Length: 285
Image 1 (tube, rainbow, N blue to C red):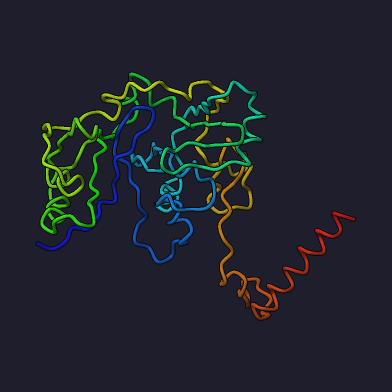
Image 2: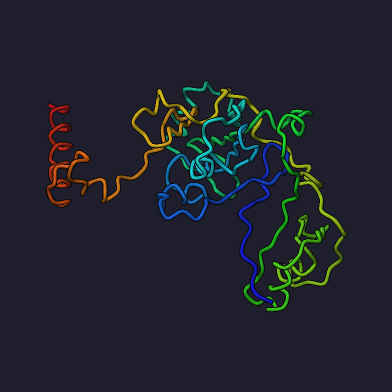
């Protein structure tokens, strides 16, 4: 049996809801690799936005994040979400944002962490609405399930794990698996499993430590006025920053009637460094 290619769709969790989201870019050689990395959750900028899904009112597609929508050229009619920044500290928003600017983002828990034990999460309040499934047409519910195999797993189990979907749930591991073979190649045990999948919150009675609303804002992550000189105008309303696409070598080397200077790339780069350095020294003195 030939290996199956990975699905462009991923089951994501947002504020207790589980649904499919388009989590890949089209096979277009003209796309910037940096934008693709951000769509895949591997980018260096605006890391928390890489795990906030967006919905297009035009195409009726839910994307894993705004960067995936950008690489599909589907930014014009994104649904505005009511975003909530909830933290474990009842501090003023300005203090929280200042601390988060010096903190880090956890890809595992999707939490923003700062000094003095600060932990925050960015959530879509709309997802908790009772009418969420009716308000977002075309959305498909799913269950987050493991498809990860151990290095020592049987090659047959690995192959069958990726071949079909028939969810099972392990009460011992508190985890869903795509099928029984995924369970076997992940755990290696022969413990009992139950047919079907459980919601992500099933059997999770741990207290919610991130519960204080620090900041609320409505946004669709696109702001041409604020991000005037940036490609795609992708905007983060929490940090008030724009996505900065990298400057390509072709842009530095542009010449001819299109407006380039015709000088070598090395010369232009050195001139750019000189201008930036001069401006910085002028600002200091």
